[in-house]
Amino acid sequence: MVHGLTGNSVATWTNDADSFWPAWLSKDYEYVNVWTADYPAPLTRLATKGSRFDIRSSAKALVDYCATTSLGSRNTVWVAHSLGGLVLKQLLYVSKDLQASRYKRFWDTTRGVVFLATPHTGNGFAGAVRDLGFPRPSEAVRDLAPGSFLNDLNTWFRNNADPSALTVLSYAEKEPLKVARVGTTIIVSEAAADPGIKGSVCIPVPHDHMTIAKLPSRDDPIYRALGALVQDLAPEETSSKTEGSARRWPVQIESRTQQSSDAEYDGSEQIAPVIRLRPRRVPAQGSTREILERLRRAPMPSSTSKGSQGAALLALEGPLRQYVDMVGPNTRSGQLAKALEALVGDIAQAGTGPSRDSAIAEYRRMKTLLVALLEAQQ
Image (cartoon, rainbow, N blue to C red; front, side, top):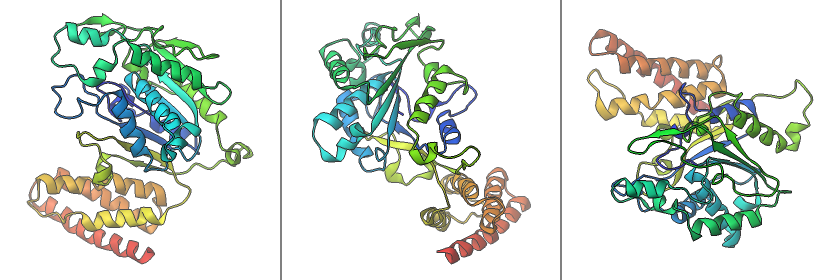
C-alpha cells in the first residue's frame, strides 16, 4: 500500500473511527500479508527531509528497499492513493523495463492494482500550490503538473497492463475537499483518475480526496471490491479447503516502535515499509528470540526513571501483546507476558511512591521468570 502527498504509512489508511483498515484484510483473509510503505512526500521544500524526492527517485528507492524483503514472492495486489499511484507505476516500470533481476519479481507477481484518486494525467494542484504562494513546492508536487512525463508513464502502463494477467481497479472522488487557501474543490477529477485501461472503468465513490483512502467500514464498495480481488488470487491450497476447515492465524503487527532502527522511517531521506501485517501458522523460533532480545535490552525501571528510559519500557507493550496473541493467553509464557504487559502500563501511569515501587518489584520478578522460560525454549 503506497500513500500519497503528505501521507504516511498509518494516517493515510486510518479512518475517523481511528481504525487502521488494512488490518481488516489480515483478519478477513487468512492467507494475506499486508505491507504499507512510508516514503517522504512533503508539500514544500521547506520540509527538512525528503523534499527533493521526485516520483522517479521515490520509486527507485522503494523498489530497492522492497527487494530486501519477502514482498513479491507471491501474487501481489497494490493499493495506491493519489501521488502513490504514480510512484507505483514508476516502480513497476523500473521492475519490468530496467532488466534488473532483483527487481523483476515485482512486475512478474503483480496481479492487481487499485488506484484511489490517482491523477494519471496530472492535476491543477501543483499550479495552485505555486499560484497561492506556497514557498518552494517539493519535487513531488512539481511532478504532479500535467506534462510529458506523466503522459509517457501512463502510456507505458496502458501498453503493458495486460487485462488477462492484471486486474486494474480505479476510483475517483466525488465529494469536494476543503483546502486551506484554496477553498472547497475536487482535487483529482474523474477524467484524471481514469488510467484508460482496456476493460477497466473508473468508478466515482462518495468520498473526498482524503477519505477515499480512509475506508469507514467493510461495507465500503472499495473494500468489497478489494476483498473480491484478493479472493480471486487466493492460493490453491486455501481456496480448496472444505467449508468449516479454514483456520485463522494469529496476526503479528510490526510498527515503528516495534521494529529495528534500520527498518524505521525516521523522517530522513530513505524509503522503508514500516508496517507489516502477516499471518503466522505457529509460533516461530524467530519470534521467541525477538521478544527475548527485547526483554534483555529493556531498561530495568527505577522509582525515578523517566524520559527515554520510560519510553523504552513502554515500547515493550506492543511486542508483549503480540506474543500473547501468538502463543495464546493460557500458555505459561503467554500468562507471564500478559502480566508483564499490564505491569508496564501500571508503571508508566504511576507517579512516585509505594504503588510505583510495588509495580517495579513485581515487574522485575515477572521479567526474570519470563526470560528464564524463553531461554529454556531456545
